[in-house]
Length: 113
Length: 193
View 1: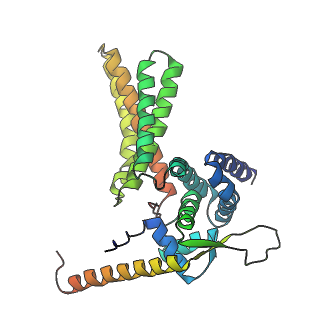
View 2: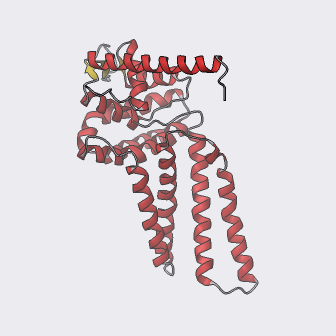
View 3: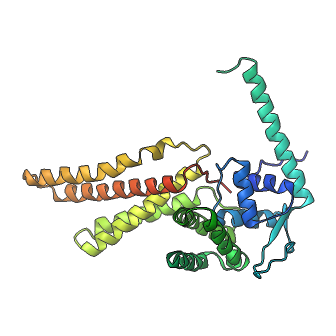
């Protein structure tokens, strides 16, 4: 029987969820994570690119070519979820939704202790 | 503006401490990210966050360059060991002012980074620990005043006095760095990757 995949670590989870909307470059990804968490999660560059590097190595995200033509000749690398990465991100989302629903149900049922 | 340029240049130099593959791959992107952040946030806050980020992710990336996954407690243990080595250096070379200064400096900086790293590695973070940073800052001078008063009263305990002054420096240093870190990362969460 195949073992259940382990939950993604926090930074990987935030990045995977942020990329569900579509491809983003590093700074946009950092802002998106911050926005999704109401500003509570702010990643440093080392954390962001270290996590991206690991997710690329694990085959969960892929680097895409430049999609935006920039006049100042700065290159921006964009990242998007691979099909495997998308499936895992959706699984994680579903796991979190189930968790919240169960806890909310218990609280609503009076089990507040 | 020139200060900001100098800080960005210093950051670029520090990026050279990452493993070569990681550096080649992401150096330009990380510099660009820092510049982008400075447009929207006060530069001092961005640089404080970047300094802490470098202190924790450089050792992590070096470990990961040799392993598949970074051991969760590697970075905190590394800084704790460096702090212990610094404290030993200060104690052993206590009569030599230079050695004492270097040892104390290493112990305070590495000890503070170790304390922050242990806190980052904890699954649940409480702000209660850093809320009391000012108590550590105040404790240091209080201990020094106590030692001076004791010496003035004729108490002859040279080794105990040096040890207490050393502890006072460590406490104040940790308190100050905790205060700075708390200010820099206010309302922000650092994540386990």
